[in-house]
Image (cartoon, rainbow, N blue to C red; front, side, top):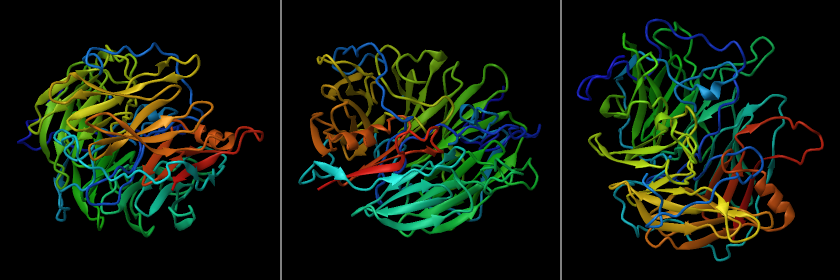
Length: 555
């Protein structure tokens, strides 16, 4: 096993593709669509906010789970796309990694290196922001919402990825089949349409300077080439709907063929993408190259990047059965590591839930219980030292991390020097329906706080994002009600209703056709959009109509 050098030295086997032994071969079978991403388009200091949450199959289901046991202090006991890889057969989503053996050097041109987008799921300076910082969300004069626009789902014969949705002050933007479309926020009418030469195969959740980044395939599927590679990186202006630039990268070990990417992210003025055959970075504004991949003989590779306020990477070293995992903070302009932290032995996969502060979620020794693929949170300080370790295995908490993806952990937000997460659903006092709470852990001590916000009878509640020091949360509706958006005061945990969705059967059916783990939720300024991440022809002609997205508007 090789060990990367200390941060003062150039990264060993840096950010990208496989070692000189030769790149893995592309899958011989069609890959399955990767697991859905967490909400794309979080708000940011200098850009229009985009807002979101993760995704689920098609209907909301309450898992059978033991009730949440409230520990002393009301929190919990001590103690949550494509990565840089396209690994195929029929299990692409289970093996999104980057082949090792690259490090990156700075190009002639570079961005400012100063991030303008918020962290993966937190707020600016999430480890320092004091409670009481004003948020941007205001209570509508009438929180009772009405349907805004519901766009029917396209019905291609095969599954098509439509990852990506963003919400700004003026526009809701959604990926579609071979296009990206912007809708106005007044009546939901189409504002612009950006045709693409092929289908979207990845998207970042971040926005910087009203721009975002997507991945799209090399071409449309044909009988001769049924599964095009995901080789194109593009930046979209969310205001105008223009594709500002697109680019490809070549692997140092793969000849002249473009690299197949599986993840893209943004940090400030840097767009970073990676895949099994290598990775690269570009300037957000003009698409000029920032990092150039270079091979070496090390056995390390980048598992995936996380962007937002800062840029970070999870890096794995060692080809044997006991690899070592490192978390590195990177300079967005050069790709050089600022510091690195060696994670505990026994961790093979992990995710990043915040880049500032850098917080890594991992399933240590497969000890995750109620939470999905996360047993511990590792909170690092600005020097890359472990500040605290938060254990979640002993409690009944419900954050979620994919098995292999780095920037797709969900149901956790970071702000006010805390991490907020939901408890698992449990039986309430009512004879039917389930409920849960949002609680928090202190990032300095790692201990549960007394914070507790109750979802209420028959509702379950999940954090979407931070709004200043407040938590914006979505309440999954009961069988006889409509969903809600609430703002939770970060100091008092008092809930303020921002949106009450319609309770009629038709509206309720539309809303509950989307679920928290496999849909994208975007809320801002009295507008809520809920969208799919994959589409295909319905299995039965008798199925209920399906929608690419539905939306609600409060007065």
